Every structure is written in C-alpha cells, then in structure tokens.
Length: 62
Image (tube, rainbow, N blue to C red; front, side, top):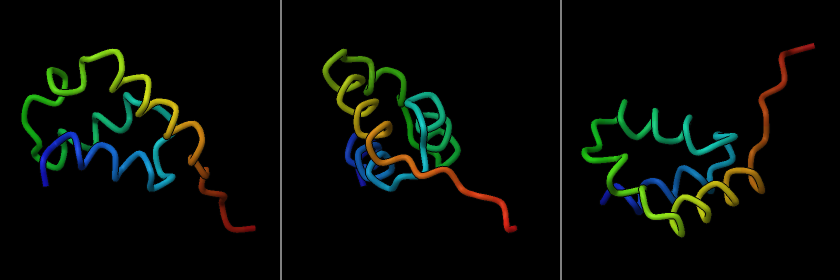
C-alpha cells in the first residue's frame, strides 16, 4: 500500500492521537520518504484532523 494511503488508513484506525505518532508507525513499518510525502500542509492538516476525530485512548484494565 502506498505510504499516503497507509497514513490515511492508520489515521482512521483511532490508534493515533497526532501526526507525529502516526509518522513513527509508518517509519517502523518500513515506509520510505514519510516526512517528504506527508509534508504538504493540506495532507498534514487532514491527517491531523482525522487523528483527533477518531482517536480512542486505550484504557487500562480496571
């Protein structure tokens, strides 16, 4: 899957609170040129908004 498409899929997953943690995951998965591909302000803003809207923090077992 191309890096930008993977970034959108991860953002929609609800696991990432911000773009920085999402980018770390992409790099850990071996995606190349993450910073360059996600550098456009429109893409950054859109991904950040998706992360904020969908993030569901994990809650420790009680």
